[in-house]
Image: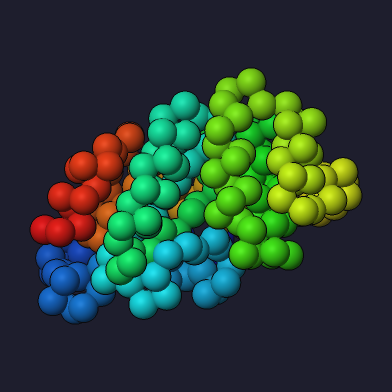
Length: 200
């Protein structure tokens, strides 16, 4: 999958640079193009199943600004039913951040309806999150935290490597980073600005 991604992005930037493709005219967007190589249920998606606006977010659970972004994205979804957010687990801080991302992906694979709640609960933990914090959140959401942690430790999650390669292909080095329709935006985007962008 990684080689395929590399070829796609090389082709994308080559073609885009030569022909100045207008994604809006093609009834597509950069955000949709970026995630085209993933299987439909491979990465977490929340919001509209037939969206007018697609947001792809790269994040780390121990990133303070990612926590603020998570809050604003949740608020955006409450008021805009034509938006879909695609979450790209990108644990740049490693350690417990990577554990949290893998557990979140396990939740997505086993109980996708709980992902959004678990994701936002993880985001509230901040930079001092511990293993027991993650387990407690899983338990509070009706999951077996200890069991899920054990499963996570035994499995390989190639999706995290794929996400990391995707981020590097796009030149993203920090979190949060969002692709909103046709615009790549590094850093935190306030709710008021999000609403302006998707109504342009």
